[in-house]
Amino acid sequence: MGKDGFVIVYTGKGKGKTTAALGMALRAVGYNHKICMIQFIKGSWHYGEMTSSKRLEPEFELTAIGKGFVGIMDDKSPIEDHKKISDEALRIAKEKIQSKKYDIVILDEINYAINLNLVKLDDVLDLIKIKPPKLNLVLTGNYARDEIIEVADLVTEMREIKHPFKAGIRAKKGIDF
Image (cartoon, rainbow, N blue to C red; front, side, top):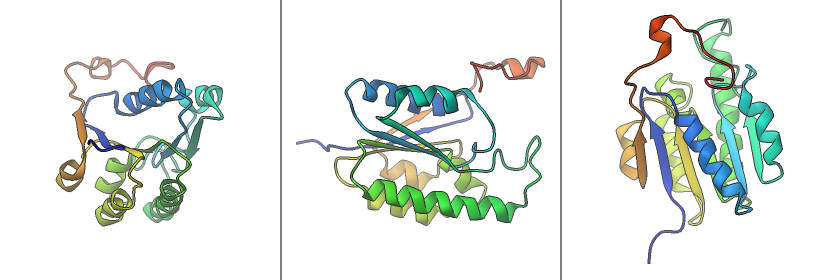
């Protein structure tokens, strides 16, 4: 007898981690499954999934909590602000995971949040431990820690082979955001 719910990790330096999680969500909505996606980093920017996810309601729920990308581009927020918001995201994640209302909970960019010391690895491992048996828990973001990889059931690493940014081409609406 197999496990009902999995811990799934999408990591690596290549593009497509969040997109893979969203693809899974799109598939699951087709079966009337309930999905909650909590975004730890991307919150203050507008990007396509903020608008398109509304079309998947009520089965799909997007909670964007972060203050935007940390330490790059136009980020002028003190790291303490990012940490406070990440603590709130962890609290919400725990609540959603324990609610038993969802078939899938996606913790978007949580691996990156660990790497930036916005959340503690042990707190994320605790979320994995409290996961109800039927829940699929998805963790995205570069720099997945070995401890998370070890407890995961499925780990996919996105590897960049070629990227237009290296040729000076900026991010494109509908493709990159």
